[in-house]
Length: 149
Image (cartoon, rainbow, N blue to C red; front, side):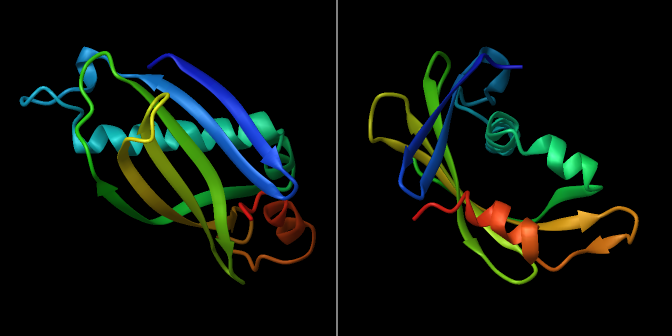
């Protein structure tokens, strides 16, 4: 797995988490840049780190709830190559009654050069009920504390 470093940026209700990943040779495709499928792995790593470092994972586990991705829209804007340091900013963009959207932005670390951007829609799944739950009460409050406003 790539080397990972993280940072939080908060200002009032603004909540953005940053994960840094260094591009390794095994991330590359035949053309010498990061394969498109690898970005999905980078984004997943950043989402896990976001929830883990906020301290929310134990609450979800104790509640029998899981975050399940139901849609990813990703735009690839600039090729990353071996040795590049990538910064992945992750935040919750919006919350609906049944799903929420996280926005993730990959840049070359220390620059404004956008490598990729993604909107990731997820539901909260109750394993006992075998279905997605309505985002309300304590669950909604928890998600609202993550909003990027």
